[in-house]
Length: 167
Image (cartoon, one colour):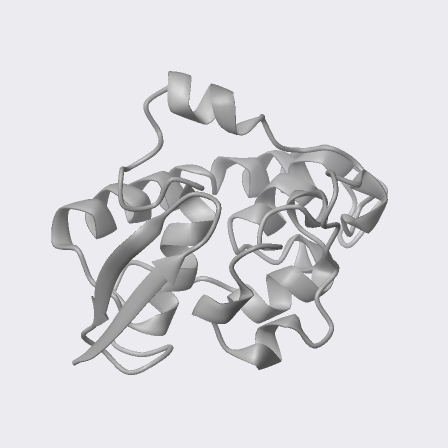
């Protein structure tokens, strides 16, 4: 079991352990279509999300990542539209777990790396599954692969590791 020590803007001396090999032994109901590396390359969260925690994750994730260190930049997003609520809203709605103060994507990156926390994993996978409804709305309202249709929903799906370019 490998120990990871995190020191960034949100966490100081936070320790977690990798119990699985990277990108393996996912819960059978959790089938993300994009890896964290894919998501960073496509521009998620206006590029602001992972700017101070590069040391925690593989360098390769950041080689072609679209990041914006100073502020959110929606032009970095794949669909060039803002599709996320501010972190303060996530906190207000109770979506943030103390171990992952940045939210779902931080949980996913750590899960992908091999961290497991049974109760939190199940909660986040349930949230991930509930986002699928947006893919149904796109299928119902748009011609196949019309990437100009429902861009905000498509960008939101990218934030949750669904590849909305295939809808």
